[in-house]
Length: 222
Ligand code: SF4
Image 1 (spheres, rainbow, N blue to C red):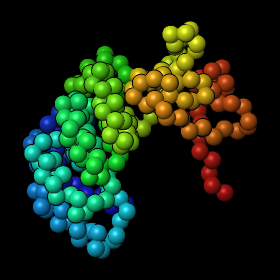
Image 2 (image 1 turned 180 degrees about the vertical axis):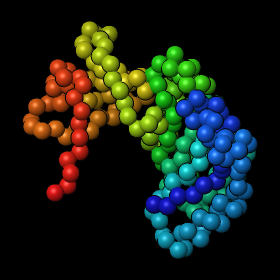
Image 3 (image 1 turned 60 degrees about the vertical axis):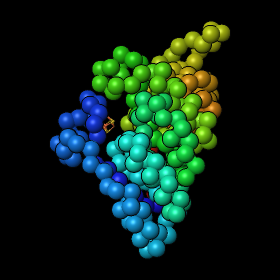
């Protein structure tokens, strides 16, 4: 895999990101021409033959006209790529998401951040829970994979589902999970949590129910 940057800066005001973002890159979004990006990628392909690409813009899915030109010219590169978009932008431009997936946007990172509207508002995210859910549905319909941007961690609270069974809901996306770690409903439906390593054969969920403050450490390789 290799990385490329097509733009610096972001016009949004998320409280956990700004004003650092503006201090680093300036207040205006500055983007390279599509031709410049394609020329760099051709050179990278010749030199390193990468199998995939990470487009490391803070928010790649911005500026419709630029993206349309990218869709037209990117097929000569043809590598599958990871890039980030916002839920609101994805909801407003589902046709553009579909076209980008067709030319290689295989892994779509979205800053859902929280399943609570109160938290989203506190974070000044500028998005809604409904947009989080709708954008996840749009991505799912294209066949691309979603990568959740919420600091890479899910935190859970216990709740009851409609049938009165005990389930867990994560605060970052609002997805509900059963005790086996399968997502039952919400943006991550269909996915399964990876088991956490632990010191004996006790099922982690059982242990953590009684000892919710337990910390899990990665063992040092011998
Ligand atoms: S959209 Fe992303 S890059 Fe822009 S301010 Fe929010 S978190 Fe930062």
